[in-house]
Length: 252
Image (tube, rainbow, N blue to C red; front, top):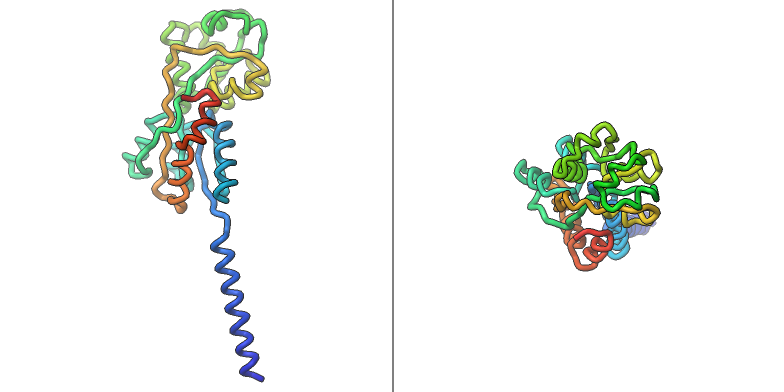
């Protein structure tokens, strides 16, 4: 009787081990991604497709590129970064914190407004001279590449001094758009992707030709505990399927 009980205990133990191994094998993998704020909308679509197809849970943080860099330097546990410039991933590579960067999108800065009177203007420069524009939001140029590109455009046409007292600085380019969308300001320098969103279609935008094209690069973080998944997702972001989504939001 005792031997029979021992055999049953061993069988139960083996079954429990098999169940545990099966659970571990089929446990949902997770990926933590730091994403430049301008890329929020296309990222949500891309991540949803990847999660559905590969059963990976993607946790994303959206903020300015400068903040992402600071977080990595402070030990934030990101597996992958998708920034709004080339310089940040390259810098992380040189510091031994990231793998070789890859380019995933090229974006544009625009001037957006919900004010129909301002929408009647011929271009962004004339719009900024209208009395209806008393406050203009812009992402902090020190940490946000879209903010820096917008400042470059203002300087190129000699309008920086004209608008400097009307500027309201946002933490990132997505927040800059939200300020204008909620009419906390009269107009916003933001990403074209925001202007093409459902919220953006409720207003109008002016192309800012003098703003440089923003080359956006990403990188896998060397300390990642999910390096293989991070590399696979990076490839998925650059795939034709994802690029079609990216182009839909105005990126090149």
